[in-house]
Length: 57
Image (cartoon, rainbow, N blue to C red):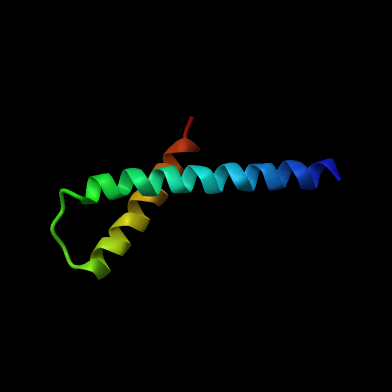
């Protein structure tokens, strides 16, 4: 049972981290002029890169 709680807490932290990175990505994208479809793809790529970088300690 403790493993499930720990996993749930880890998922919550991952969700919080993703939201934080999405906010940062929006700040980066404020300087880029592109259509909305490309903006969504760029945001996702930036967030994925930030999450990946967190695992490279």
